[in-house]
Length: 272
Image 1 (cartoon, rainbow, N blue to C red):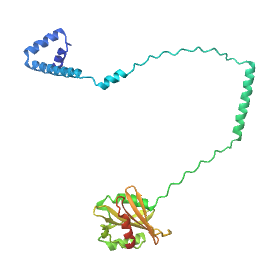
Image 2 (image 1 turned 45 degrees about the horizontal axis):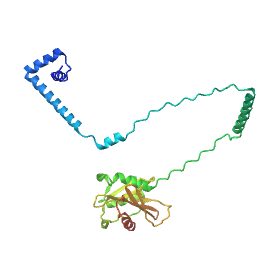
Image 3 (image 1 turned 90 degrees about the horizontal axis):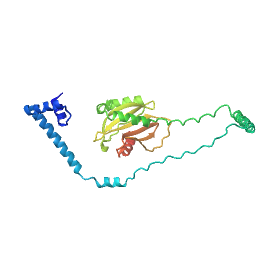
Image 4 (image 1 turned 135 degrees about the horizontal axis):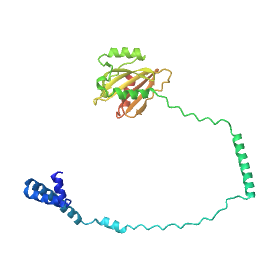
């Protein structure tokens, strides 16, 4: 057993008489044992004094009031037992006859009800169809991906303007110009192509001074009447301004925090 453990037991009076005498001789003759004993004794004295100081602290007034105001629980008296009268369960002859007649009538009524019910249950009401996905949903989902990839934001760089026009015109089937949006603080970066509602769509990518991506999207969409109105849509953190003209759907997409997106869309509609 370690010496510290033996000396601690010695201080607590938990040693036998022989071990107690042995430890007393060891403390008197061994400086190391005396040092350990003094440290243990000092720690015990410090702890005892700290505990005494805690006992001297006054009890908080709120605690005293709560103790005084608390009521002792009242002992519950056992509920008196009520004697149950003995019941005679054996029916008489008339009671048995009446019960048989009642069962006959009830059974016949239940059988009649089951007989008149239709054999098939009514068909459940069909659930309402989910709203169809539009190309604006695809624009928003696609924008969240490429707008956060600065090294791969475009497929064809802005320096290849002729290649961009030839490529997207032949793939998307829409004639267009690359708008100059320098007056709006936007710099042309290049172009991309993506699929929206199963159709190829073109994108002209711009960046503002803060590095946010603004894109012009267009897709062939014949059979839809031209209304000439701008529709602004917000999909969480993405804002889209869209319009339709000459069998083509157009949209300008950017962060929802951009308050100038409608003005940019107005300029794009006249230059593209």
